[in-house]
Length: 164
Image (cartoon, one colour):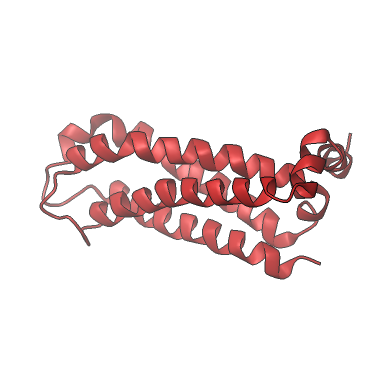
């Protein structure tokens, strides 16, 4: 089955049709998507800005990670679930948009960056999180995260404007 055929199957599904045809469902799902995005990417920005030393310098990194990580992960779960629903509602159109494909690529790269940070640095934050000078890898991951998630948000907002 081709990607386009799969997209058509999703688009024509009961869920896709219901979301598109409902007066309230699509805007509600989109609103929840934006709330999840605000939680996930918004909190991630606070963490990344702390890692690069631009905000909250007085707050220890292990403390900020411990307090924000559950909310951030919950926001990502909401964002991904609602994003999947939004995709189903417009799958055949979205799959042909280069900006949507760029958005997916940036999400994949941001996810790889996050996984690398977690496996390389996040597990032993107690060892480096109180240092005055952070490891270069932590800074690279934080700047990469800021850039990649900014690109995800920008390309996501471009979708309605660059649709056919």
